[in-house]
Length: 219
Image (tube, rainbow, N blue to C red; front, side):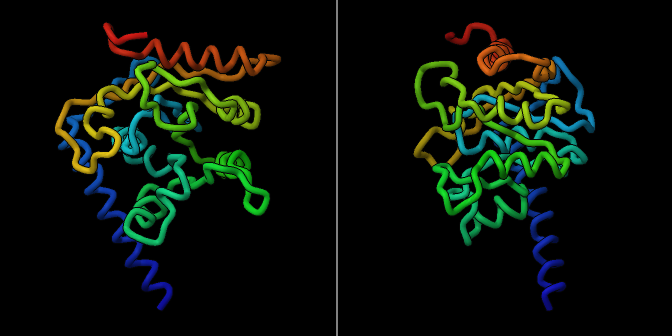
């Protein structure tokens, strides 16, 4: 019985995944812009600006299917890990790496959860700002997590990804998306250089991400 339930759940997840990809493309007209790299089967950490709950969906949507299967978005346990439909989508459809927003002693530290996922060979979609940016600033200050992941997995490629326009498609507090064109730009991969400091690595990562913004956007 458990095997049958698992088969049904997996089939439902595949169907919902195809629907999510189609819906995201239909609403946003999203297109990938591979400027600095190609979609290749390498272990990567795609790090992006963060303005909407739909950000990782958009990145995940534009990846080729083979890469999509190997790429896990990092998402908040309290939002995507419940028992309802959202939890099913987070766990079974997107195979998200679910982390606690606030670390506690009785649960694994979020960084250890992410390092374990990388050790399993998967790629990640990661937001170094740590929370959604609802300000007028282009980016919030980066947390240290991106650097610690680079220390743990120096052979992985860290790919900057700029998501444009999704914050207008799904503004905070709204549940019905507004059809607008979005783009997802992938920049040149970077790695932690031997002996490179945390400050230097995060500054380079931030600059690489800002360099992908469309012309004319405020600094």
